[in-house]
Image (tube, rainbow over all chains, first blue to last red; front, side, top):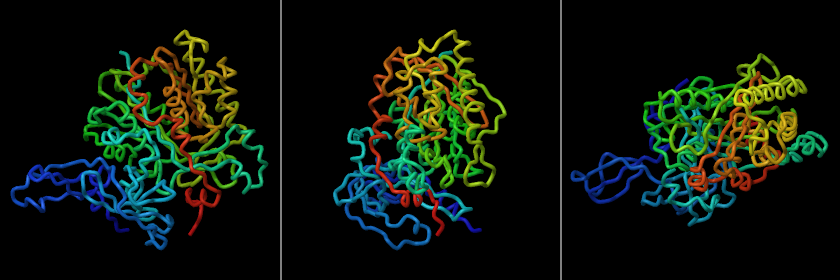
Length: 144
Length: 345
């Protein structure tokens, strides 16, 4: 069988822990990580940055007809989420009966996909409503 | 060398199914809940497995005590539903909680007591000063064949315990294990569901091993059931822990705070550890907890634990077991079958 294991392995930091990039020169936060700041270019001062993972739903849709890898999960919700540091990411919303624009979300660790029954399992970040645990302060989540 | 629990965290999936709903499908009487003393069980989401549960529990444990994950020198994950037969769960957990790469890891398997075996291994390394902190996890998405009695209780959940020497929330004063070759429950390589010996899982397995380990530890430490404020026993159903407590001389009041099986079912490797976490959620400094796990095959690990003052500082920094229990969303059997991958497409 063919495997995408090396490709997945290269993305593990960003998928598991939302590791992106911060430019100390202009203050911009970038996800997924980049080797170049699109604003500062040569004078950029880039550093690795772990995003808190909390954010706000900008827009969302429900997928009813999915590709083969995801057809068991239909219907499922997909959203564009603005992370609190600024970048927008596309992610699945789980454990949520009704997704709403403006809803606050937190990161959760889930299976993203599988290479069939024999291949590797892709793990990574999806999002769940922040309101599930009302006392789960955003401060404590940033440490999680 | 004093060692014990530095922090703890649990994870219980969001979904539940009532036992009455399972009984409706298979034509069992509704009194099955009463006879098992289990009323609903947790169900994993379609994208959750023993790894994702272990990671969530471990992240919560680190958050609760604000620990630097780079201090962790060992990650041992106990489960009977590791998603890979070859590729350790602990490697994924380590990466997901941002440890350094300087740690040892191994997956443990001993039916429902693999999590307490992981705690023992961490205690050994910590107490001998070979590592700073060890992370022991019990996590399962347990399996029960459709219509089998196991299906009524086989649930999903996990707990993570950080074991160390300093800033303890609870000191582990000693442990005692009792192990024999008893084939009461097993799953052969490549088989999707476990098999069991029916009533044979009771007296010669669960009761004999728990009672032997518990009595062995109390004899070694010179303690009696009345010396403990709380007791936690493995919870395959609601009846067995109550009955074994009575046989050993513990009361209902001692086991009630940690008795979570009526609300979430049997989380296998997570079962006893979630019960311990639920007890730590309410225990006061100075109180003593007696814990005995059971794993089919068969063996039991008994622990004597004393709660320390630090519990008051960190307890409220993360969700309690009762918070997770209160957060359930109910499925019917059709959705449950989809969640558990019981439908063939």
